[in-house]
Length: 304
DNA sequence: GACTCGTGGGC
DNA sequence: TGCCCAAGAGT
Image (cartoon, rainbow, N blue to C red; front, side):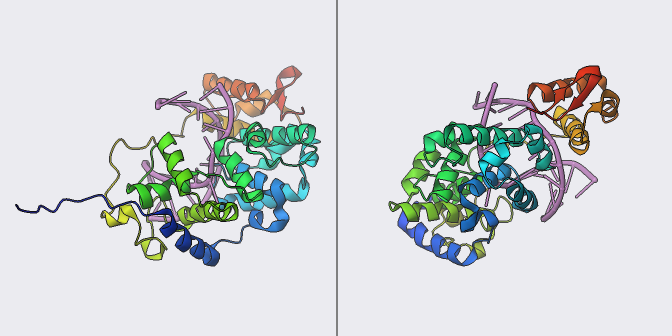
């Protein structure tokens, strides 16, 4: 019978064949980021993780430095008005993160004696900390063994192991299982692997224009061995922005951030022409606790 | 699960 | 130039 050459899925590489090259690559190419230095401590790691949610490193760097200089410990931030956190957040985006980081600092001060907890469940219970951030802090700050599944790691696993270009839209149980199975047994090595696989996704195995020529596991990569087939299925949801409530909220909050005191309604009305959407956006900011209404139609960042 | 929630830079 | 993306969390 005639053998027909059909594209066949490459076998998934064993974990050991991935760990050593990726860890060696990380030794040589890891960026020197301030939150990776020993003096950052768990608080520095935690602050960086909040800021890095959906935000590029280059934009986080300056804000991170100012933040840690001003609030070197959770208790220092907890003693401030939440509006100060929102103001210091600047233009990082998603300002509810600032509010949650402040709330987490308050909770750490009240419940944990001012020290960032090392326990995964206690981290997860803090505002603004979800599955990823809890694992990241426990792993990066405390050297624990956790699957740290961020967008970079998910993409690396999707390609190197599963053999597809992109991971699913939302994290699946299968991905969690796979990530756990890939974790080195040794705790310190597992923590190192978490950081290394994330860095590989950030620097080499990027969403677009991946650089397989610099990839330490190119020879093991199931996706590359399969001929790098294009992503199948529905396109991932694009994020529209222009004209949305988010844009209006951003404009409103920018005015309040830059004003050091109550702002009259008229100053807010000036940033968006359409009154219904403008009012809805402002209501949303108030409901979120990002804006505090005062008497006389004035507004300011939250004082408490 | 589907949506919302900012901002800016790279291609 | 527009579109895509960036260390997610909460509802």
